[in-house]
Image (cartoon, rainbow, N blue to C red; front, side, top):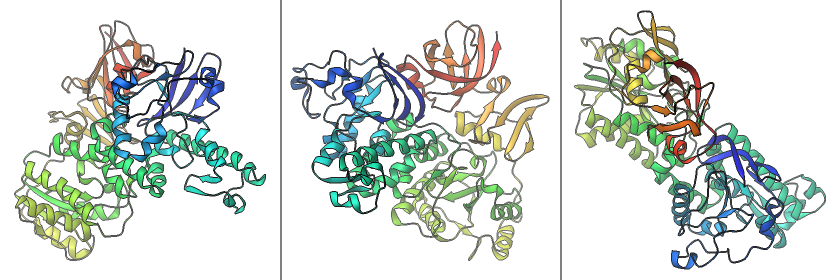
Length: 544
Protein backbone atom coordinates (compact mmCIF):
# COMPACT_ATOMS: atom_id res chain seq x y z
CA UNK A 1 0.00 0.00 0.00
CA UNK A 2 1.59 3.26 -1.10
CA UNK A 3 1.07 6.67 0.44
CA UNK A 4 1.62 9.99 -1.32
CA UNK A 5 2.15 12.97 0.97
CA UNK A 6 1.82 16.15 -1.14
CA UNK A 7 3.90 19.02 0.20
CA UNK A 8 3.50 21.82 -2.36
CA UNK A 9 1.23 22.42 -5.36
CA UNK A 10 1.57 24.62 -8.40
CA UNK A 11 -1.43 23.94 -10.59
CA UNK A 12 -1.34 20.26 -11.56
CA UNK A 13 2.32 19.97 -10.51
CA UNK A 14 3.23 18.80 -7.03
CA UNK A 15 6.16 18.11 -4.76
CA UNK A 16 5.82 15.44 -2.12
CA UNK A 17 6.97 12.13 -0.70
CA UNK A 18 5.93 8.74 -2.08
CA UNK A 19 6.10 6.02 0.59
CA UNK A 20 5.83 2.43 -0.66
CA UNK A 21 6.17 0.84 2.77
CA UNK A 22 9.76 -0.24 2.12
CA UNK A 23 11.20 2.95 0.69
CA UNK A 24 10.32 6.60 0.23
CA UNK A 25 11.26 9.03 -2.53
CA UNK A 26 10.93 12.78 -2.88
CA UNK A 27 8.90 13.71 -5.96
CA UNK A 28 9.21 14.81 -8.68
CA UNK A 29 12.10 12.46 -9.37
CA UNK A 30 13.67 9.99 -11.75
CA UNK A 31 14.62 6.64 -10.29
CA UNK A 32 15.31 3.00 -11.01
CA UNK A 33 11.65 2.21 -10.57
CA UNK A 34 12.29 -1.55 -10.30
CA UNK A 35 13.88 -0.85 -6.92
CA UNK A 36 10.76 1.02 -5.80
CA UNK A 37 8.31 -1.45 -7.35
CA UNK A 38 10.09 -4.83 -7.76
CA UNK A 39 7.01 -6.16 -9.57
CA UNK A 40 7.92 -3.92 -12.53
CA UNK A 41 10.91 -6.13 -13.37
CA UNK A 42 8.77 -8.68 -15.23
CA UNK A 43 5.37 -7.13 -16.02
CA UNK A 44 3.33 -8.79 -18.75
CA UNK A 45 0.40 -7.76 -20.93
CA UNK A 46 0.34 -4.17 -19.72
CA UNK A 47 1.83 -2.22 -22.65
CA UNK A 48 -1.52 -1.11 -24.00
CA UNK A 49 -1.64 1.76 -26.57
CA UNK A 50 -3.36 4.86 -25.25
CA UNK A 51 -5.64 4.94 -28.30
CA UNK A 52 -6.88 1.37 -27.76
CA UNK A 53 -10.68 1.13 -27.49
CA UNK A 54 -12.31 -0.13 -24.31
CA UNK A 55 -13.19 -3.58 -25.68
CA UNK A 56 -9.49 -4.20 -26.43
CA UNK A 57 -8.05 -2.56 -23.32
CA UNK A 58 -10.34 -4.58 -21.06
CA UNK A 59 -8.85 -7.87 -22.31
CA UNK A 60 -5.50 -7.12 -20.72
CA UNK A 61 -4.87 -7.34 -16.93
CA UNK A 62 -5.11 -3.78 -15.61
CA UNK A 63 -3.08 -4.53 -12.47
CA UNK A 64 0.46 -5.45 -11.42
CA UNK A 65 0.43 -7.16 -8.01
CA UNK A 66 2.69 -5.12 -5.74
CA UNK A 67 3.17 -2.43 -8.37
CA UNK A 68 1.54 0.84 -9.41
CA UNK A 69 -2.09 0.89 -10.50
CA UNK A 70 -2.37 0.97 -14.30
CA UNK A 71 -4.83 3.53 -15.66
CA UNK A 72 -6.00 3.93 -19.25
CA UNK A 73 -8.23 6.52 -20.95
CA UNK A 74 -10.71 3.83 -22.06
CA UNK A 75 -10.94 1.96 -18.73
CA UNK A 76 -12.67 2.63 -15.45
CA UNK A 77 -10.28 3.84 -12.81
CA UNK A 78 -9.46 1.40 -10.00
CA UNK A 79 -6.95 3.69 -8.24
CA UNK A 80 -7.50 4.64 -4.62
CA UNK A 81 -6.38 7.66 -2.65
CA UNK A 82 -2.63 7.48 -2.01
CA UNK A 83 -1.87 5.04 -4.84
CA UNK A 84 0.82 5.48 -7.43
CA UNK A 85 -0.74 5.24 -10.88
CA UNK A 86 1.06 4.25 -14.07
CA UNK A 87 0.16 5.45 -17.57
CA UNK A 88 1.72 3.14 -20.13
CA UNK A 89 3.01 4.49 -23.44
CA UNK A 90 2.62 8.11 -22.41
CA UNK A 91 5.78 8.95 -24.37
CA UNK A 92 3.81 8.27 -27.57
CA UNK A 93 1.27 10.99 -26.76
CA UNK A 94 3.74 13.79 -27.57
CA UNK A 95 3.23 13.06 -31.27
CA UNK A 96 -0.40 14.21 -31.05
CA UNK A 97 -0.78 17.23 -28.72
CA UNK A 98 -4.58 17.23 -28.95
CA UNK A 99 -4.78 13.61 -27.84
CA UNK A 100 -2.16 14.29 -25.14
CA UNK A 101 -4.46 16.85 -23.54
CA UNK A 102 -7.73 14.97 -24.09
CA UNK A 103 -6.29 11.80 -22.55
CA UNK A 104 -4.78 13.77 -19.66
CA UNK A 105 -8.05 15.52 -18.82
CA UNK A 106 -9.97 12.23 -19.02
CA UNK A 107 -7.52 10.45 -16.73
CA UNK A 108 -7.19 13.27 -14.21
CA UNK A 109 -10.95 13.71 -13.84
CA UNK A 110 -11.51 10.07 -12.89
CA UNK A 111 -8.43 9.59 -10.70
CA UNK A 112 -8.24 10.54 -6.99
CA UNK A 113 -6.46 13.86 -6.64
CA UNK A 114 -3.94 12.58 -4.08
CA UNK A 115 -2.35 9.89 -6.27
CA UNK A 116 1.23 9.96 -7.54
CA UNK A 117 1.60 9.74 -11.33
CA UNK A 118 4.30 7.61 -12.98
CA UNK A 119 5.13 8.06 -16.68
CA UNK A 120 7.48 5.23 -17.72
CA UNK A 121 9.92 5.91 -20.58
CA UNK A 122 8.48 9.44 -20.97
CA UNK A 123 10.95 11.82 -19.38
CA UNK A 124 13.84 13.52 -21.12
CA UNK A 125 15.55 16.69 -19.91
CA UNK A 126 13.62 18.52 -22.66
CA UNK A 127 10.19 17.06 -21.76
CA UNK A 128 10.35 16.90 -17.95
CA UNK A 129 8.95 20.40 -17.42
CA UNK A 130 5.79 19.90 -19.52
CA UNK A 131 5.28 16.46 -17.94
CA UNK A 132 5.43 17.85 -14.40
CA UNK A 133 3.20 20.77 -15.45
CA UNK A 134 0.73 18.12 -16.67
CA UNK A 135 0.72 16.43 -13.25
CA UNK A 136 3.29 13.63 -13.58
CA UNK A 137 5.54 13.04 -10.59
CA UNK A 138 7.68 9.91 -11.04
CA UNK A 139 9.90 8.95 -13.97
CA UNK A 140 12.53 6.38 -14.90
CA UNK A 141 15.72 6.44 -16.97
CA UNK A 142 14.41 4.42 -19.91
CA UNK A 143 14.05 7.35 -22.31
CA UNK A 144 17.45 8.89 -21.58
CA UNK A 145 19.19 5.49 -21.64
CA UNK A 146 17.68 4.86 -25.07
CA UNK A 147 19.03 8.22 -26.25
CA UNK A 148 22.45 7.23 -24.92
CA UNK A 149 22.32 3.98 -26.88
CA UNK A 150 21.44 6.02 -29.97
CA UNK A 151 24.42 8.33 -29.43
CA UNK A 152 22.34 11.40 -28.52
CA UNK A 153 23.45 14.08 -26.06
CA UNK A 154 20.45 15.40 -24.08
CA UNK A 155 19.91 18.86 -22.62
CA UNK A 156 16.77 20.70 -21.49
CA UNK A 157 17.06 22.85 -24.62
CA UNK A 158 17.22 19.95 -27.05
CA UNK A 159 19.27 17.01 -28.29
CA UNK A 160 22.63 16.89 -30.08
CA UNK A 161 25.03 14.27 -31.46
CA UNK A 162 27.24 12.52 -28.91
CA UNK A 163 30.20 14.62 -30.09
CA UNK A 164 28.70 17.49 -28.04
CA UNK A 165 29.96 15.61 -24.98
CA UNK A 166 33.33 17.30 -25.42
CA UNK A 167 32.10 20.75 -26.41
CA UNK A 168 31.98 22.17 -22.90
CA UNK A 169 28.18 22.48 -22.94
CA UNK A 170 28.06 20.62 -19.63
CA UNK A 171 30.71 19.95 -17.00
CA UNK A 172 28.93 17.22 -15.05
CA UNK A 173 30.92 14.14 -13.89
CA UNK A 174 29.59 12.19 -16.88
CA UNK A 175 30.92 14.78 -19.34
CA UNK A 176 34.29 14.95 -17.59
CA UNK A 177 34.55 11.15 -17.81
CA UNK A 178 33.25 10.97 -21.36
CA UNK A 179 30.28 8.90 -20.17
CA UNK A 180 27.23 9.82 -22.31
CA UNK A 181 24.84 7.62 -20.33
CA UNK A 182 25.80 9.25 -17.03
CA UNK A 183 25.54 12.75 -18.54
CA UNK A 184 22.03 12.11 -19.86
CA UNK A 185 20.88 10.72 -16.52
CA UNK A 186 22.44 13.64 -14.68
CA UNK A 187 20.80 16.12 -17.08
CA UNK A 188 17.39 14.62 -16.27
CA UNK A 189 18.03 14.69 -12.51
CA UNK A 190 19.25 18.28 -12.69
CA UNK A 191 16.21 19.40 -14.70
CA UNK A 192 13.86 17.76 -12.19
CA UNK A 193 15.69 19.51 -9.33
CA UNK A 194 15.17 22.84 -11.13
CA UNK A 195 11.50 22.00 -11.72
CA UNK A 196 11.11 21.25 -8.01
CA UNK A 197 12.49 24.69 -7.19
CA UNK A 198 10.07 26.38 -9.60
CA UNK A 199 7.12 24.44 -8.12
CA UNK A 200 8.11 25.59 -4.65
CA UNK A 201 8.25 29.16 -5.94
CA UNK A 202 4.83 28.71 -7.64
CA UNK A 203 6.38 29.71 -10.98
CA UNK A 204 6.50 26.46 -12.97
CA UNK A 205 4.39 27.98 -15.75
CA UNK A 206 7.14 30.52 -16.39
CA UNK A 207 9.70 27.72 -16.80
CA UNK A 208 7.38 25.72 -19.08
CA UNK A 209 6.78 28.70 -21.36
CA UNK A 210 10.54 29.11 -21.80
CA UNK A 211 11.31 25.39 -22.21
CA UNK A 212 8.58 24.64 -24.74
CA UNK A 213 9.87 27.20 -27.25
CA UNK A 214 12.27 24.61 -28.71
CA UNK A 215 9.57 22.02 -29.51
CA UNK A 216 6.47 22.74 -31.59
CA UNK A 217 4.56 19.81 -30.06
CA UNK A 218 5.12 21.15 -26.54
CA UNK A 219 3.88 24.60 -27.57
CA UNK A 220 0.78 22.91 -29.01
CA UNK A 221 0.27 20.90 -25.80
CA UNK A 222 0.44 24.08 -23.72
CA UNK A 223 -2.07 25.82 -25.97
CA UNK A 224 -4.47 22.87 -25.91
CA UNK A 225 -4.23 22.77 -22.10
CA UNK A 226 -5.11 26.47 -21.94
CA UNK A 227 -8.16 25.84 -24.11
CA UNK A 228 -9.41 23.43 -21.44
CA UNK A 229 -10.05 26.47 -19.25
CA UNK A 230 -12.43 24.87 -16.73
CA UNK A 231 -10.03 21.98 -16.13
CA UNK A 232 -6.92 24.14 -15.75
CA UNK A 233 -8.59 26.97 -13.82
CA UNK A 234 -9.82 24.64 -11.09
CA UNK A 235 -6.24 23.55 -10.39
CA UNK A 236 -4.73 27.07 -10.27
CA UNK A 237 -4.47 28.90 -6.93
CA UNK A 238 -6.57 32.03 -6.70
CA UNK A 239 -3.50 34.10 -5.92
CA UNK A 240 0.25 33.90 -5.60
CA UNK A 241 2.58 36.23 -3.73
CA UNK A 242 5.16 36.09 -6.55
CA UNK A 243 5.62 37.83 -9.89
CA UNK A 244 3.65 36.41 -12.83
CA UNK A 245 5.88 36.75 -15.88
CA UNK A 246 3.93 37.37 -19.08
CA UNK A 247 6.77 37.06 -21.55
CA UNK A 248 5.21 35.07 -24.39
CA UNK A 249 2.04 34.89 -26.43
CA UNK A 250 0.94 31.85 -24.40
CA UNK A 251 0.88 34.02 -21.26
CA UNK A 252 -2.33 35.66 -22.45
CA UNK A 253 -4.16 32.34 -22.31
CA UNK A 254 -2.96 31.03 -18.96
CA UNK A 255 -5.79 30.21 -16.60
CA UNK A 256 -5.09 32.99 -14.09
CA UNK A 257 -5.26 35.63 -16.83
CA UNK A 258 -8.49 34.23 -18.26
CA UNK A 259 -10.01 33.96 -14.78
CA UNK A 260 -9.23 37.59 -13.95
CA UNK A 261 -10.92 38.80 -17.13
CA UNK A 262 -13.95 36.57 -16.62
CA UNK A 263 -14.43 37.74 -13.05
CA UNK A 264 -14.19 41.38 -14.10
CA UNK A 265 -16.88 40.70 -16.70
CA UNK A 266 -19.17 38.45 -14.61
CA UNK A 267 -18.63 39.34 -10.94
CA UNK A 268 -17.19 42.81 -10.61
CA UNK A 269 -19.62 45.69 -9.85
CA UNK A 270 -18.47 49.28 -10.64
CA UNK A 271 -19.15 52.17 -8.22
CA UNK A 272 -22.72 53.41 -7.95
CA UNK A 273 -23.81 56.53 -9.83
CA UNK A 274 -20.64 56.54 -11.90
CA UNK A 275 -21.24 57.30 -15.57
CA UNK A 276 -17.86 58.71 -16.58
CA UNK A 277 -14.83 56.51 -17.18
CA UNK A 278 -11.20 57.35 -17.93
CA UNK A 279 -9.04 54.76 -19.69
CA UNK A 280 -5.45 54.87 -18.45
CA UNK A 281 -2.22 53.10 -19.43
CA UNK A 282 -0.57 50.69 -17.04
CA UNK A 283 2.73 51.27 -15.26
CA UNK A 284 5.81 49.19 -14.57
CA UNK A 285 5.32 49.60 -10.83
CA UNK A 286 2.58 47.58 -9.12
CA UNK A 287 0.13 48.44 -7.68
CA UNK A 288 -0.29 51.21 -10.24
CA UNK A 289 -1.18 53.81 -7.61
CA UNK A 290 2.37 53.67 -6.26
CA UNK A 291 3.84 54.82 -9.60
CA UNK A 292 4.56 58.48 -10.33
CA UNK A 293 2.51 58.45 -13.54
CA UNK A 294 -0.62 57.17 -11.81
CA UNK A 295 -0.26 59.63 -8.98
CA UNK A 296 -0.35 62.34 -11.61
CA UNK A 297 -3.34 60.73 -13.32
CA UNK A 298 -5.26 60.54 -10.05
CA UNK A 299 -4.44 64.15 -9.20
CA UNK A 300 -5.74 65.30 -12.59
CA UNK A 301 -8.88 63.17 -12.39
CA UNK A 302 -9.62 64.25 -8.83
CA UNK A 303 -12.11 61.45 -8.18
CA UNK A 304 -14.46 62.70 -10.92
CA UNK A 305 -14.41 59.50 -13.02
CA UNK A 306 -14.04 55.78 -12.76
CA UNK A 307 -10.46 54.80 -13.52
CA UNK A 308 -9.91 51.79 -15.82
CA UNK A 309 -6.38 50.65 -16.65
CA UNK A 310 -5.78 49.09 -20.08
CA UNK A 311 -2.99 46.55 -19.97
CA UNK A 312 -1.63 43.38 -21.50
CA UNK A 313 -2.17 40.52 -20.79
CA UNK A 314 -5.09 41.24 -18.42
CA UNK A 315 -7.04 43.55 -20.71
CA UNK A 316 -8.86 45.73 -18.19
CA UNK A 317 -8.10 46.45 -14.53
CA UNK A 318 -10.55 48.66 -12.61
CA UNK A 319 -8.70 50.83 -10.11
CA UNK A 320 -10.33 48.97 -7.19
CA UNK A 321 -8.71 45.69 -8.29
CA UNK A 322 -5.16 46.92 -8.83
CA UNK A 323 -3.78 45.08 -5.77
CA UNK A 324 -5.41 41.71 -6.44
CA UNK A 325 -3.39 38.93 -8.06
CA UNK A 326 -2.47 38.93 -10.90
CA UNK A 327 -3.17 42.67 -11.46
CA UNK A 328 -0.68 43.65 -8.76
CA UNK A 329 1.88 40.96 -9.56
CA UNK A 330 2.55 40.69 -13.29
CA UNK A 331 5.55 41.71 -15.33
CA UNK A 332 5.44 42.13 -19.09
CA UNK A 333 7.94 43.25 -21.74
CA UNK A 334 7.30 46.90 -22.62
CA UNK A 335 7.79 47.79 -26.28
CA UNK A 336 4.87 50.12 -26.95
CA UNK A 337 3.73 47.75 -29.70
CA UNK A 338 0.90 45.22 -29.35
CA UNK A 339 0.49 42.69 -32.15
CA UNK A 340 -2.80 41.96 -33.93
CA UNK A 341 -3.64 38.86 -31.89
CA UNK A 342 -2.92 40.67 -28.63
CA UNK A 343 -5.09 43.63 -29.66
CA UNK A 344 -7.94 41.33 -30.70
CA UNK A 345 -8.00 39.49 -27.33
CA UNK A 346 -7.76 42.66 -25.26
CA UNK A 347 -10.26 44.68 -27.29
CA UNK A 348 -12.77 41.83 -26.95
CA UNK A 349 -12.49 42.04 -23.15
CA UNK A 350 -12.94 45.80 -23.23
CA UNK A 351 -15.89 45.61 -25.64
CA UNK A 352 -17.68 43.08 -23.44
CA UNK A 353 -17.15 45.34 -20.42
CA UNK A 354 -18.55 48.41 -22.20
CA UNK A 355 -21.53 46.41 -23.40
CA UNK A 356 -22.31 45.35 -19.83
CA UNK A 357 -21.57 48.68 -18.15
CA UNK A 358 -22.51 51.62 -20.44
CA UNK A 359 -20.95 54.92 -19.42
CA UNK A 360 -22.23 58.35 -20.45
CA UNK A 361 -18.67 59.41 -21.27
CA UNK A 362 -15.50 57.40 -21.88
CA UNK A 363 -12.27 59.39 -22.06
CA UNK A 364 -9.25 57.62 -23.57
CA UNK A 365 -6.11 58.98 -21.93
CA UNK A 366 -3.88 56.56 -23.85
CA UNK A 367 -1.27 56.17 -26.52
CA UNK A 368 0.32 53.34 -28.49
CA UNK A 369 -1.12 49.84 -28.39
CA UNK A 370 -3.51 50.62 -25.52
CA UNK A 371 -5.11 53.38 -27.60
CA UNK A 372 -5.48 51.01 -30.55
CA UNK A 373 -7.22 48.46 -28.30
CA UNK A 374 -9.62 51.10 -26.97
CA UNK A 375 -10.49 52.22 -30.49
CA UNK A 376 -11.16 48.66 -31.64
CA UNK A 377 -13.39 48.04 -28.62
CA UNK A 378 -15.30 51.27 -29.14
CA UNK A 379 -15.88 50.44 -32.78
CA UNK A 380 -17.13 46.98 -31.88
CA UNK A 381 -19.57 48.45 -29.33
CA UNK A 382 -20.68 51.39 -31.43
CA UNK A 383 -19.62 53.93 -28.81
CA UNK A 384 -17.71 57.20 -29.16
CA UNK A 385 -14.48 57.82 -27.28
CA UNK A 386 -13.17 61.19 -26.17
CA UNK A 387 -9.43 61.78 -26.34
CA UNK A 388 -7.41 63.77 -23.83
CA UNK A 389 -3.81 63.41 -24.96
CA UNK A 390 -1.80 63.50 -28.16
CA UNK A 391 1.58 62.53 -26.71
CA UNK A 392 2.90 61.29 -23.38
CA UNK A 393 -0.15 60.62 -21.16
CA UNK A 394 1.84 61.61 -18.06
CA UNK A 395 3.09 64.86 -19.57
CA UNK A 396 1.89 68.29 -18.34
CA UNK A 397 -0.10 69.09 -21.50
CA UNK A 398 -1.94 65.78 -21.43
CA UNK A 399 -2.70 66.08 -17.71
CA UNK A 400 -4.07 69.60 -18.17
CA UNK A 401 -6.25 68.36 -21.03
CA UNK A 402 -7.56 65.51 -18.85
CA UNK A 403 -8.38 67.92 -16.04
CA UNK A 404 -10.20 70.19 -18.49
CA UNK A 405 -12.14 67.28 -20.00
CA UNK A 406 -13.54 66.47 -16.55
CA UNK A 407 -14.48 70.04 -15.67
CA UNK A 408 -18.00 70.16 -14.24
CA UNK A 409 -18.18 66.42 -13.42
CA UNK A 410 -19.11 65.50 -9.85
CA UNK A 411 -16.85 63.47 -7.60
CA UNK A 412 -17.83 59.81 -7.18
CA UNK A 413 -17.65 57.85 -3.98
CA UNK A 414 -14.35 56.01 -3.58
CA UNK A 415 -15.49 52.49 -2.66
CA UNK A 416 -12.53 50.22 -3.28
CA UNK A 417 -13.89 47.65 -0.81
CA UNK A 418 -17.16 47.14 -2.69
CA UNK A 419 -15.39 46.42 -5.97
CA UNK A 420 -12.94 44.00 -4.36
CA UNK A 421 -15.68 42.09 -2.54
CA UNK A 422 -17.72 41.75 -5.72
CA UNK A 423 -14.69 40.38 -7.62
CA UNK A 424 -13.47 38.02 -4.89
CA UNK A 425 -16.76 36.68 -3.52
CA UNK A 426 -19.30 37.55 -6.18
CA UNK A 427 -21.22 39.53 -3.56
CA UNK A 428 -22.93 42.92 -3.70
CA UNK A 429 -22.22 44.06 -0.14
CA UNK A 430 -23.67 47.28 1.27
CA UNK A 431 -20.55 49.13 2.42
CA UNK A 432 -22.21 52.29 3.73
CA UNK A 433 -20.71 53.23 7.09
CA UNK A 434 -17.58 51.13 6.58
CA UNK A 435 -14.40 53.20 6.78
CA UNK A 436 -10.83 52.40 5.82
CA UNK A 437 -7.79 52.99 7.97
CA UNK A 438 -4.11 52.34 7.43
CA UNK A 439 -1.81 53.27 4.59
CA UNK A 440 -2.38 51.99 1.07
CA UNK A 441 -2.11 49.15 0.22
CA UNK A 442 -2.17 47.88 3.84
CA UNK A 443 -5.77 48.79 4.65
CA UNK A 444 -8.25 47.72 7.33
CA UNK A 445 -12.00 48.22 7.10
CA UNK A 446 -14.23 48.77 10.11
CA UNK A 447 -17.75 49.84 11.02
CA UNK A 448 -17.59 51.69 14.30
CA UNK A 449 -15.17 49.79 16.51
CA UNK A 450 -15.75 46.48 14.74
CA UNK A 451 -13.12 45.42 12.24
CA UNK A 452 -14.68 43.64 9.25
CA UNK A 453 -12.00 43.20 6.60
CA UNK A 454 -8.32 43.66 5.90
CA UNK A 455 -6.17 43.38 2.75
CA UNK A 456 -3.49 40.74 2.47
CA UNK A 457 -0.64 42.78 1.01
CA UNK A 458 1.01 39.65 -0.39
CA UNK A 459 -1.88 38.63 -2.64
CA UNK A 460 -4.21 41.65 -2.57
CA UNK A 461 -7.11 39.50 -1.34
CA UNK A 462 -9.69 40.62 1.21
CA UNK A 463 -9.53 38.77 4.54
CA UNK A 464 -12.89 38.86 6.36
CA UNK A 465 -13.18 38.63 10.13
CA UNK A 466 -16.08 36.66 11.62
CA UNK A 467 -18.09 39.90 11.60
CA UNK A 468 -17.08 40.49 7.99
CA UNK A 469 -18.28 37.03 6.97
CA UNK A 470 -21.69 37.91 8.41
CA UNK A 471 -22.05 40.55 5.66
CA UNK A 472 -21.35 38.04 2.90
CA UNK A 473 -23.98 35.65 1.53
CA UNK A 474 -23.67 31.89 1.92
CA UNK A 475 -20.58 31.57 -0.25
CA UNK A 476 -17.05 30.31 0.18
CA UNK A 477 -18.07 28.06 3.05
CA UNK A 478 -16.42 24.79 4.02
CA UNK A 479 -18.58 22.61 6.26
CA UNK A 480 -17.00 20.19 8.72
CA UNK A 481 -18.12 17.31 10.89
CA UNK A 482 -19.12 17.65 14.54
CA UNK A 483 -15.77 18.67 16.06
CA UNK A 484 -13.81 21.74 17.15
CA UNK A 485 -10.67 22.31 15.03
CA UNK A 486 -7.50 22.54 17.07
CA UNK A 487 -5.41 23.65 14.12
CA UNK A 488 -5.71 23.26 10.38
CA UNK A 489 -8.77 21.44 9.04
CA UNK A 490 -7.85 18.12 7.42
CA UNK A 491 -9.62 16.59 4.43
CA UNK A 492 -11.28 13.71 6.36
CA UNK A 493 -13.14 16.25 8.50
CA UNK A 494 -14.69 18.11 5.55
CA UNK A 495 -18.32 17.28 4.71
CA UNK A 496 -18.93 19.94 2.06
CA UNK A 497 -17.32 22.82 0.19
CA UNK A 498 -18.52 25.59 -2.10
CA UNK A 499 -17.59 24.52 -5.67
CA UNK A 500 -16.22 28.02 -6.32
CA UNK A 501 -13.41 27.56 -3.80
CA UNK A 502 -9.88 27.46 -5.19
CA UNK A 503 -6.57 26.97 -3.45
CA UNK A 504 -5.70 30.21 -1.63
CA UNK A 505 -9.29 31.45 -1.33
CA UNK A 506 -10.41 32.98 1.94
CA UNK A 507 -13.08 30.68 3.41
CA UNK A 508 -15.35 30.38 6.43
CA UNK A 509 -15.32 26.96 8.07
CA UNK A 510 -18.70 26.12 9.61
CA UNK A 511 -19.55 23.29 11.97
CA UNK A 512 -22.04 22.49 14.70
CA UNK A 513 -19.55 23.36 17.42
CA UNK A 514 -17.23 25.94 15.89
CA UNK A 515 -16.55 28.49 13.19
CA UNK A 516 -13.11 29.17 11.73
CA UNK A 517 -11.61 31.60 9.26
CA UNK A 518 -8.71 30.65 7.06
CA UNK A 519 -7.36 30.02 3.61
CA UNK A 520 -8.20 27.01 1.45
CA UNK A 521 -5.21 24.72 0.91
CA UNK A 522 -7.07 22.79 -1.80
CA UNK A 523 -9.69 23.58 -4.41
CA UNK A 524 -13.17 22.32 -3.55
CA UNK A 525 -12.93 19.48 -6.07
CA UNK A 526 -9.82 18.06 -4.42
CA UNK A 527 -11.35 18.36 -0.97
CA UNK A 528 -14.06 15.96 -2.21
CA UNK A 529 -11.73 13.64 -4.16
CA UNK A 530 -8.91 13.32 -1.61
CA UNK A 531 -8.69 11.37 1.63
CA UNK A 532 -5.64 12.97 3.21
CA UNK A 533 -3.96 16.34 3.53
CA UNK A 534 -4.83 19.83 4.78
CA UNK A 535 -8.06 21.32 3.43
CA UNK A 536 -8.00 24.72 5.19
CA UNK A 537 -5.14 26.61 6.83
CA UNK A 538 -6.97 28.00 9.85
CA UNK A 539 -6.28 31.51 11.09
CA UNK A 540 -8.88 31.94 13.86
CA UNK A 541 -11.36 29.64 15.60
CA UNK A 542 -14.60 30.58 17.35
CA UNK A 543 -16.39 28.09 19.56
CA UNK A 544 -20.18 28.01 19.34
